[in-house]
Image 1 (cartoon, rainbow, N blue to C red):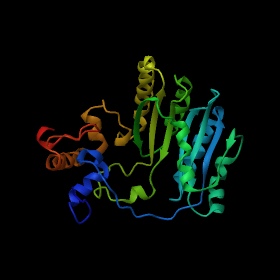
Image 2 (tube, rainbow, N blue to C red; image 1 turned 180 degrees about the horizontal axis):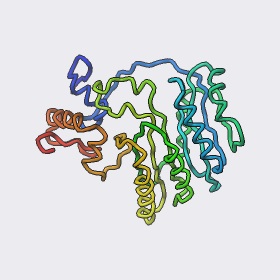
Image 3 (tube, one colour; image 1 turned 90 degrees about the vertical axis):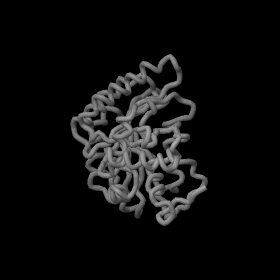
Image 4 (cartoon, rainbow, N blue to C red; image 1 turned 90 degrees about the horizontal axis):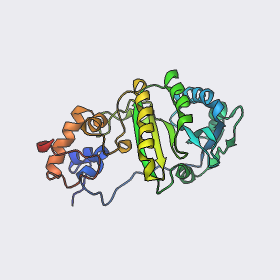
Length: 282
């Protein structure tokens, strides 16, 4: 049993913040909490015909937004089978200022406007309906330092071919405070990314595996020319191999983590994850 902190086992503390379960089981955490809320948050849903227009407004809003704004853009399917575009997120500052910043996204025709004042904890539960338990999943993702017109057009044009209704495409807004932590302070890399693109394949029947996985991979490959090549390790599937794992950390950090793995888990007991192998066998 070890305590990892800036003062005790600092190299392990560095590796745990990004390297995760490769180094053992965390039995307790100490958090610095910040009071937050109520926030202006929720979901906006638009007809798919407005997707490109809304996508451009989303880019304009997020690229100029203060830290208090965090928004995701999604292409998804409603329970009745209607394909739509949507915005999910919040403004964590004075409500009147949030109303002003969100106004461009709330103009024109909407199918649903459920943006309002709510507890932060309520906001956190909104995405659960988009990702129900018990589904089969295959995801691919890449970071991006920009959101180009061609990338936006590609996603909007590809989504109508989605083979299963729970599958969706998401652009996550990055930047903000995350980008101002020093690149070497933790094992997390790609802090310069402004967005993260995720192709989320979700379905119910094993017989559909090949069709859904192929669709996710095809859209991801088409999008790659518009991304930066880095990947968020928690969205990386287990069969992608060593090259993609190195892309999550970068070669220097990966080697540093492999040395750390050799010290704390030389036999690679903790391997049922995005596995960083000990340096001696890497």
